[in-house]
Length: 115
Image 1 (cartoon, rainbow, N blue to C red):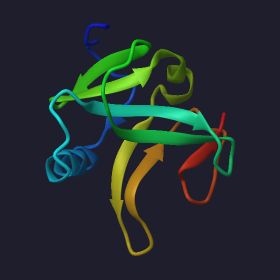
Image 2 (image 1 turned 180 degrees about the horizontal axis):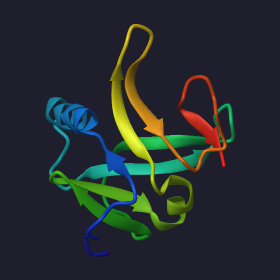
Image 3 (image 1 turned 135 degrees about the vertical axis):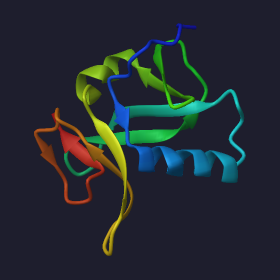
Image 4 (image 1 turned 180 degrees about the vertical axis):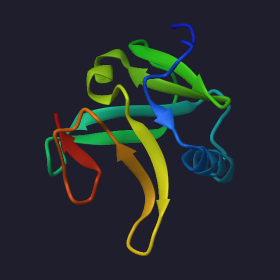
């Protein structure tokens, strides 16, 4: 498997990192799992985001932020480079938000985009 690279093309805000570590602890995610960040076809606008805990796969690039391993398939970097994942707690919305400079359009739910 690939070595850990120094700087991830994706940033995770401090509040999102706190929530991710809380989820890992509450759901007893195994220590060999990291955070998978990616895209898949579908959603209102063409692509939707993938965010979940997984083990490293052969095609992954591996990064680390604040002690958490991040896995991203190499081919997804084109769509995700420069993106920031944040945690939002508002009156109408609570959860992870994706601020993606590569998205030409995003849908109203913020979970899908077109590139």
